[in-house]
Length: 115
Ligand code: 5GP
Ligand code: ZN
Image (cartoon, rainbow, N blue to C red; front, top):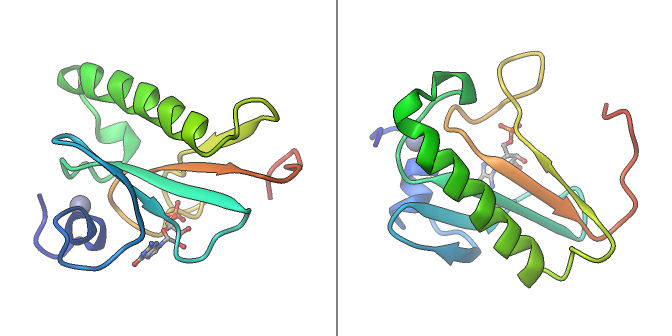
Protein backbone atom coordinates (compact mmCIF):
# COMPACT_ATOMS: atom_id res chain seq x y z
CA UNK A 1 0.00 0.00 0.00
CA UNK A 2 1.26 3.45 -0.90
CA UNK A 3 -0.57 6.43 0.56
CA UNK A 4 -0.15 8.67 -2.46
CA UNK A 5 -0.72 6.06 -5.19
CA UNK A 6 -3.84 6.68 -7.28
CA UNK A 7 -4.44 2.96 -7.92
CA UNK A 8 -4.00 2.06 -4.23
CA UNK A 9 -6.61 4.74 -3.50
CA UNK A 10 -8.96 3.30 -6.14
CA UNK A 11 -8.52 -0.22 -4.69
CA UNK A 12 -9.31 1.16 -1.20
CA UNK A 13 -12.42 2.92 -2.55
CA UNK A 14 -11.04 6.38 -1.71
CA UNK A 15 -11.25 7.41 -5.36
CA UNK A 16 -14.41 6.31 -7.15
CA UNK A 17 -14.14 3.94 -10.08
CA UNK A 18 -16.35 1.81 -12.24
CA UNK A 19 -15.64 -1.49 -10.51
CA UNK A 20 -15.75 -4.73 -12.48
CA UNK A 21 -14.49 -7.16 -9.82
CA UNK A 22 -12.83 -7.22 -6.42
CA UNK A 23 -11.60 -9.74 -3.92
CA UNK A 24 -9.06 -9.76 -1.10
CA UNK A 25 -6.15 -9.66 -3.49
CA UNK A 26 -7.27 -7.90 -6.68
CA UNK A 27 -9.37 -5.03 -7.96
CA UNK A 28 -10.59 -4.56 -11.53
CA UNK A 29 -12.17 -1.38 -12.89
CA UNK A 30 -12.93 0.33 -16.20
CA UNK A 31 -10.25 2.58 -17.64
CA UNK A 32 -11.28 6.24 -17.39
CA UNK A 33 -10.04 6.80 -20.95
CA UNK A 34 -10.98 3.59 -22.79
CA UNK A 35 -9.20 2.74 -26.03
CA UNK A 36 -11.70 0.03 -26.98
CA UNK A 37 -15.33 -0.90 -26.19
CA UNK A 38 -14.01 -3.06 -23.34
CA UNK A 39 -11.03 -1.68 -21.44
CA UNK A 40 -10.55 -2.98 -17.91
CA UNK A 41 -7.59 -2.39 -15.60
CA UNK A 42 -6.65 -5.28 -13.31
CA UNK A 43 -4.47 -4.53 -10.31
CA UNK A 44 -3.21 -6.33 -7.25
CA UNK A 45 -4.13 -4.52 -4.02
CA UNK A 46 -0.49 -4.91 -3.02
CA UNK A 47 1.50 -1.93 -4.26
CA UNK A 48 4.17 -3.05 -6.72
CA UNK A 49 5.55 -0.22 -8.84
CA UNK A 50 6.82 -2.04 -11.93
CA UNK A 51 6.23 -5.60 -13.11
CA UNK A 52 10.02 -6.00 -12.90
CA UNK A 53 9.83 -5.28 -9.14
CA UNK A 54 7.91 -8.53 -8.63
CA UNK A 55 9.88 -11.13 -6.68
CA UNK A 56 9.63 -14.93 -6.41
CA UNK A 57 7.26 -14.26 -3.49
CA UNK A 58 4.86 -12.76 -6.02
CA UNK A 59 4.78 -15.89 -8.17
CA UNK A 60 1.39 -16.99 -6.87
CA UNK A 61 -0.05 -13.49 -7.03
CA UNK A 62 0.98 -13.05 -10.67
CA UNK A 63 -0.47 -16.43 -11.62
CA UNK A 64 -3.75 -15.69 -9.87
CA UNK A 65 -3.87 -12.26 -11.53
CA UNK A 66 -3.76 -13.90 -14.98
CA UNK A 67 -6.47 -16.39 -14.05
CA UNK A 68 -8.62 -13.60 -12.66
CA UNK A 69 -8.06 -11.61 -15.85
CA UNK A 70 -9.20 -14.63 -17.87
CA UNK A 71 -12.38 -14.76 -15.82
CA UNK A 72 -12.91 -11.04 -16.43
CA UNK A 73 -12.39 -11.55 -20.18
CA UNK A 74 -15.02 -14.30 -20.11
CA UNK A 75 -17.49 -12.09 -18.29
CA UNK A 76 -16.84 -9.25 -20.76
CA UNK A 77 -17.73 -11.69 -23.57
CA UNK A 78 -14.32 -11.30 -25.23
CA UNK A 79 -13.04 -14.85 -25.36
CA UNK A 80 -14.63 -16.01 -28.59
CA UNK A 81 -13.46 -13.10 -30.77
CA UNK A 82 -10.20 -12.40 -28.94
CA UNK A 83 -8.71 -9.61 -26.89
CA UNK A 84 -5.37 -8.34 -25.63
CA UNK A 85 -3.57 -8.06 -22.30
CA UNK A 86 -1.02 -5.26 -21.96
CA UNK A 87 1.38 -4.51 -19.10
CA UNK A 88 3.30 -1.32 -19.75
CA UNK A 89 6.61 -1.08 -17.91
CA UNK A 90 8.55 2.15 -17.62
CA UNK A 91 8.89 5.32 -19.58
CA UNK A 92 9.30 4.14 -23.16
CA UNK A 93 6.31 1.84 -22.81
CA UNK A 94 4.25 4.80 -21.58
CA UNK A 95 3.56 3.52 -18.06
CA UNK A 96 1.75 6.47 -16.52
CA UNK A 97 0.65 4.98 -13.22
CA UNK A 98 3.42 3.50 -11.04
CA UNK A 99 1.38 0.57 -9.66
CA UNK A 100 1.37 -2.57 -11.80
CA UNK A 101 -1.76 -3.05 -13.83
CA UNK A 102 -2.89 -5.28 -16.64
CA UNK A 103 -4.94 -3.70 -19.39
CA UNK A 104 -7.68 -6.00 -20.74
CA UNK A 105 -8.62 -4.54 -24.11
CA UNK A 106 -11.17 -5.90 -26.54
CA UNK A 107 -14.39 -5.44 -28.43
CA UNK A 108 -12.81 -4.28 -31.68
CA UNK A 109 -10.11 -5.40 -34.07
CA UNK A 110 -6.72 -4.62 -32.55
CA UNK A 111 -3.79 -3.60 -34.73
CA UNK A 112 -0.28 -5.01 -34.51
CA UNK A 113 2.44 -3.92 -33.94
CA UNK A 114 1.28 -1.66 -31.10
CA UNK A 115 2.06 2.05 -31.28
P1 5GP B 1 -0.45 3.03 -18.23
O1 5GP B 1 -0.16 4.00 -19.31
O2 5GP B 1 0.20 3.41 -16.91
O3 5GP B 1 -0.20 1.61 -18.62
O4 5GP B 1 -2.02 3.09 -18.02
C1 5GP B 1 -2.64 3.82 -17.03
C2 5GP B 1 -4.12 3.79 -17.36
O5 5GP B 1 -4.83 4.23 -16.24
C3 5GP B 1 -4.50 4.71 -18.53
O6 5GP B 1 -5.12 3.95 -19.55
C4 5GP B 1 -5.45 5.72 -17.89
O7 5GP B 1 -6.51 6.07 -18.74
C5 5GP B 1 -5.92 5.00 -16.65
N1 5GP B 1 -6.22 5.88 -15.53
C6 5GP B 1 -5.42 6.85 -15.02
N2 5GP B 1 -6.01 7.44 -13.98
C7 5GP B 1 -7.20 6.81 -13.82
C8 5GP B 1 -8.27 6.97 -12.87
O8 5GP B 1 -8.24 7.81 -11.97
N3 5GP B 1 -9.35 6.15 -13.02
C9 5GP B 1 -9.41 5.19 -14.00
N4 5GP B 1 -10.52 4.44 -14.04
N5 5GP B 1 -8.42 5.02 -14.89
C10 5GP B 1 -7.34 5.82 -14.79
ZN1 ZN C 1 -0.31 1.61 -5.47
